[in-house]
Amino acid sequence: MRNILLMVILLPFAALMLMPFFGTKYTLTDSQLYVDSGLSTQTIELADIIHITPTRSMTSAPALSLDRLKIEYRNKEVLISPKDRASFYQEIQARNPKIVIEKK
Image (cartoon, rainbow, N blue to C red; front, side, top):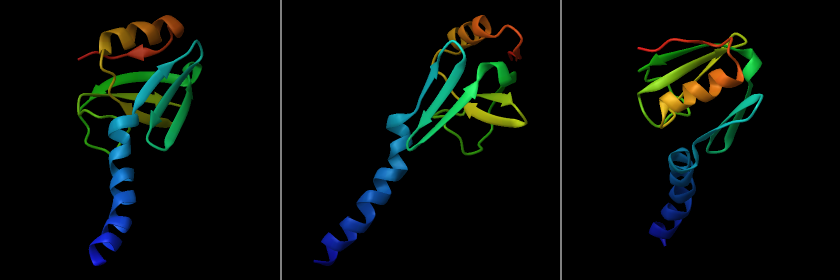
């Protein structure tokens, strides 16, 4: 009985911890970047993005790799790790050519 109770308590916690690994995605539309990670979704207006910089920051973020991009917008920032960085640069620059992209 004790093992069942322990499973009932720990299973939802484990599911919440693993959710970002299975539900992290980035979607570009004509005017927005959606950052979906687990239970959280951020909507960033492309017109608000000022700067994109590569980083290896270990800060908690909706990024599954340490090979990340820091996106700065409206006095905020978010770290993401798109699979195809070159394609991401090309797509986001096509939608907003004013974004400064630093490549290392």
